[in-house]
Image (tube, rainbow, N blue to C red; front, side):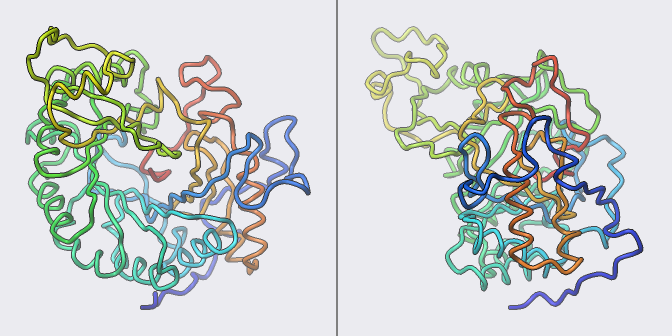
Length: 403
């Protein structure tokens, strides 16, 4: 299968909206413009990490208006000629896989399903990389019509955003009455074999936080893997505050009303989600029913066994309060072909502009390596802390970056 898309004719001045800078102009103070000659191969950085997990955004457009991501009126979308074509996407992924050690690919947005050539892109990627795990994050709207075709094209598995099972709450959070469409998409993904189907939920204080136990029970009954995500300061309205977000500790407390969580014995291996085995809470001798934080030693494996069999797992992504930056293995490419070494980076490096100027694969790989060498230690800074006084929220929202 081939992607029949050419490279757009560039207007004078280069890639529209690229705003790219030479690496020497964008580097943090005191950091070399280029990697030392003896730096490790692949997408290594100054802190000994190596990126092998590629997140590539197919579009900045989305058909929902989630309150923690977009303003109600939406955003100004990128011009069509500024967005990577299918052919360019396949080439960039190939450079990552063949030259730079990328071992996993996640397609993101915006909303990937709004791209008319999505199935063709996945088919071309699969043809080029028969063994590469290719997953996709989606809001699920329209997935019921495309799940089987995506699986046939070569998509490995899928993540679907689902913050509530109640129509009114869902509409309040997404500003769209599409819950039935999302649920149909989740079911279709499961039927098509795009498993394990993972569900992503962001809890908002006073809106859907009390639904967390019932959402987990619903997912466990159907064999889906639910992951709760701390709200991050990546909303277009810049209304995020630390005190208003639901923390990982609070999530565990809420779930403990009905479930006992114990650490998943499998290695985390760089995954953003910390996984827990889930058992139903039952009344046993010595169990007061208290909601102790199972992240501590309070929920030992032995104690959990008394509550019955493992029903499944739940993940918690605690980017704010329990960051995992020291083992981050991700590299990000935005829809207009910019390298973001960190989700919170304020520097971006233009790969697509260089590609359209006729650069070789080796030159593009070198630009990518140089950009990743400058990856900050955490949260866009060289120290950890989203509540640090010097933290500055990125100008882009999550939809414009690519999750």
